[in-house]
Image (cartoon, rainbow, N blue to C red):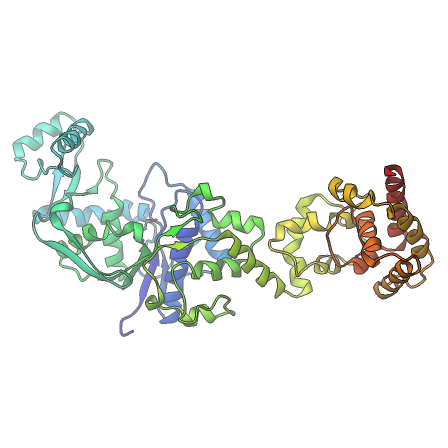
Length: 492
Ligand code: GLU
């Protein structure tokens, strides 16, 4: 790439960072890294009613968690990094940047004051609908005389500034993902640049900022495709060179409709809470609308930054698949060493309220016991809870199906004695003694293993049996098996 690559992620802080926004941030970040460019974070808070400081904080947190470090932009401590700031649109507005550029277009006759009231606009829309015309602004304020203007002002009407869209011709661009896109100008409309409140609209502020921040590539979701011709006409009106545009494919839920709350968790924060690793989310998001030639699924550290390209982006919608995401998280969890796995699991264990001082073996051994089965970190406490308390919470179905077998109580009383007499209470000894017990009593291994498992853990499934018993310790295991014997005996 010959140009000085400068890309931006420009979220509107009106809630948590969602999967779609995070994907846009990631693709911009990867593109910048790949071409040694600059990745900028700009806060687009021109929606005065919906923007919140809290949302800005959430965006910072989610980006930091995903490791999407930006080179320039608004910083969490309220400062800014880079020479093209401010990077927060409300601050830029306060500095008068947008008004200055809007005035320039008004002076050149390329924009105009519009005094239409909400009621008038509503009527206009209804009329257009009746006449089967697109419901766009009819341009009635394009040529107001000074006299008309001052009359409106006297009436107390607050004007907006509208862009004078060309009536004829075509606006087109070569999108880096969608290829040639074009819109007939007659279908575009005189959009509002500056609202009656004095605040700029998204389309206006975005162009001014992309230009002043020397953005080389605008990479954003394809829900913005219809905004792009409006923005291109602004570039033309100012006589500015426009950036390249790349519109990322839409993200659909598993049912084929646009990904939304209906499909479950949609914010990065929710996935974080559920116990997904940031590497998983980053890897998974990268594959939403992008792939390598050989459809690589799992990427080592730094590999995405190396392999990403806009050429590998598809324009067809991508489907968000929660099952694949969980599978991928399992893959990433399996790569963790014991110590790191415990670090990740710790917040979930603490939050679970379990007595973490109860187990007699180090927590990292306990947590690592089932590491191959985990899909998300939040499921760890429930899977291991029987290690953390005196009594077993029995799964009623497991009790029903396993303890009602005629051999169950015999197995439990016998095995309790066997275990009591093991001196070196270690996995291999426990296993050997259990198998010998089965053989001596003419039982199948399963007929012994199943009731023992339910007796010590309360569940029909869990960690590898003999390691689990070793970790529980002789006293605890024997006590639990004897208690379970009572239960099984009562079932007879
Ligand atoms: N603030 C816009 C949004 O969050 C940014 C769109 C753009 O990247 O131009 O959708």
